[in-house]
Amino acid sequence: MKVGEACGVFGVYAPGQNAAQLCYFGLFALQHRGQESAGIATSDGQTLTVYKDLGLVAQVFSDASLHALEGHVGIGHTRYSTTGSNRWENSQPANRQVGQISIALGHNGNLTNTAGLSQRYPVESAHGTSDSAVMLAAIAEGVDEHRSDDRGLEIALASTLPSFEGAFSLVVMDQGRLFGVRDPHGFRPLCLGRLPETVSGKSGWVLASETAALDIIEASFVREVSPGEMVIIDATGLRSRFPFPLTDPKLCVFEFVYFARPDSILNGRNVHGARTEMGRTLAREHPVEADVVVPVPESGIPAAQGFASVSAIPYADGLVKNRYIGRTFIEPNQLLRDRGVKLKLNPIAATLAGKRVVLIDDSIVRGSTTRQLVALVREAGAREVHLRISSPPYRWPCYYGMDTSDRSTLIAARLDIDEVCRHVGADSLGYLSLEGLLAATGSDPRSFCHACLSAEYPTDVEGAQGKFWLEEPIIQPLSRQPD
Ligand code: SF4
Image (cartoon, rainbow, N blue to C red; front, side, top):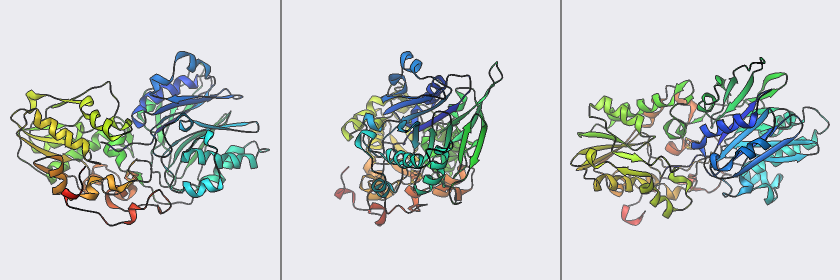
C-alpha cells in the first residue's frame, strides 16, 4: 500500500488555441497524481464552462464534452481525495458565480486550518465537503467585496490567501485570467511553461504540477513557481506577486521518493536520477550478499538500478506489472487493496526461483502490501528475500495532502525495524537514512518537508485532523498489533 497523493493541477492561457485540448493532454500526463475524478474549466473571455466527473481522464472526457469546452483559458484537475469523500461535488475544478464573475479553482495539497476556516466561510454541501470548497468560499467572499473592481479576483486572492494554512498549489481562473499560486512553504510542486508560437505568432503560458505535463504539449519549461508566489496571466502578459510573509521552502520529499513521475524535474534535478542515487546510497548503507536485485515496479526501478550498480549484484525484472490497472490506493477499502496486489503484480519464477533476492521498494506505509509482495516472491521460489527501502521509516502522519493522517495505521509507528521485518516476512530489512535521502535529491536538505519521517512539521498542525502527531512513537510488540 502506497500513500495517496492529493491531485494534479494544470492551467493554460493560450490565445488562439483550444485550452480544453491542451488541458486534456496535460491531465493525461498528471493522471498518476489522482484517479478518482477529473475535470476541466475553460473560458472564451465571456463564459466560463466546467465539465468534471468521477473517473480517469479518458473515462470522463469524450469528443463531445471537450467540444463543449470553448475558449483559450483553462484549468484542469485530477483528484485523489484526502479530505472530503469521493463524490461528484468534491471533484474539481470547483466553481462559483459571484455576480458577473465566474471563478474556477483546482487545488493540490491539504489545508491544516480547514475547521476554523469553515466556520468563517460556511459551505453548502452542494458545493462539496473538501478544504478546496472552503478555500473557494473564502475567495468568492473576497471577490464579492471587490465586485466593482476589474481586478476583483486578483485582489481577493491576495487578501484571502494568507488566511490559508498548510499545503496548496492552486490554479485559479475567471473569464479572462489565469492564476497560479504556491503556498509559502511550497509543499506541492507547481511549474511554469511557455507554449510554442503558433503560425499566427501567438504563444501562451502553462502551469502544471509537474514538468512532464509540459512535455506532452511541447511547452518549454520556464521555471518553478516560487513558494509563496502568485502568478497572474492575462492579455497583458505574466505578472508576479508575493502575498505571503517570507518563510523557508519545504517541498514534500516524497515527491522525489514516489509521487512525481521519474521524467519530471524538481528543484532542477531529474527525479529518475535522484531515485537512482537513493538506490546507490541504500546499497552502501545496507549491503547484503545476494544473487539478484529485483525492483517493485515501477517506482522501485531506478533505486534498484542504483543498488545493483554499487553492489555489483545483477539487476533483473522479477515482478511484472499489469499496466491496465491503476494504483492500488485508488481502491477505497483494505479488502480491495489486499486483492489489488495480485491484480497488479505477478512474479517471474525464472528470475526468482532458488535465488537470494534483494527486493527494492520505495516505501512501506501500512505494511500489508509489502507483506504480500514478499510472500509472492517466496511463492515463486526465492530462497531468501532481503528487503531494501529507498526511504526512511514512515512513522508520522502527513497533514499536507497524503492520506496518512491516522498514525495508528502506519506500521513503522507501531513496530521497530526488526519487528517490521518479521511482520512482512523478509530475511532482512534496511531503510535508507534521512541524510542519504536528502543528499540524493541534490538540493539543500533544509528545503524539504520530511515530517512523516522525522516529526519535524514545518507548520503548526494542531488544528489539523487528529492528534496522533502529539504522541511519542508507539512501538509495541508485534503480537499486540496484528495487521
Ligand atoms: S509529511 Fe511527508 S508526505 Fe507529507 S508533505 Fe511532508 S514529506 Fe510529504
